[in-house]
Image 1 (cartoon, helix red, strand yellow):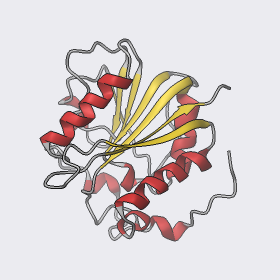
Image 2 (cartoon, helix red, strand yellow):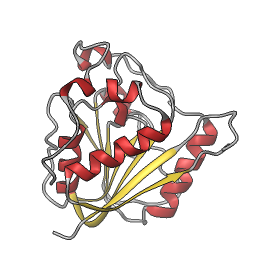
Image 3 (tube, one colour):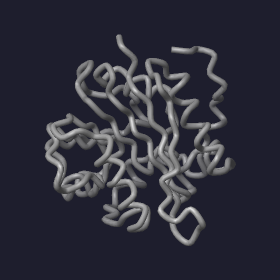
Length: 212
């Protein structure tokens, strides 16, 4: 853990500071990236998440975009809306939890092979604390996969995200992981299905849990 974090409280201010439970109370059974970006993300999961892996899907919704034909082990969805979680066919467990209110994950140490944060990292108001917990619940060598595009609910996205570019978002997420501690091999891939434009981009920042 690196306690010299450059992140300040004002970086995580939001236009709407009202209760997250109120904002997310209405189910949104829609996807937040287009089909081409979803296919690209599903392909990345197919390449990197081995069959049988125990997976934690943080800030989960009604779709996890995992490849349908790959059998995984335990797939836990932690999210804010019980209707959305109930509609997700890949989840074996569902946990209602507000990470902005409590970044401490309700799981034992070294419980998962992979943790996914899919197109939602922009809403975390205590990301370093959350990723510190992610490192705790990952098994040694386990992978965290943070994917994002250029879409957001601007009223709930933190200031640091709203006022930075896509390229800067990559550095922001890498910084979260670095200052959380416990990770190695922090890496980035541009998996945009149409690099020339015309669709949703897809960026992925990953890291592995360091040996304990």
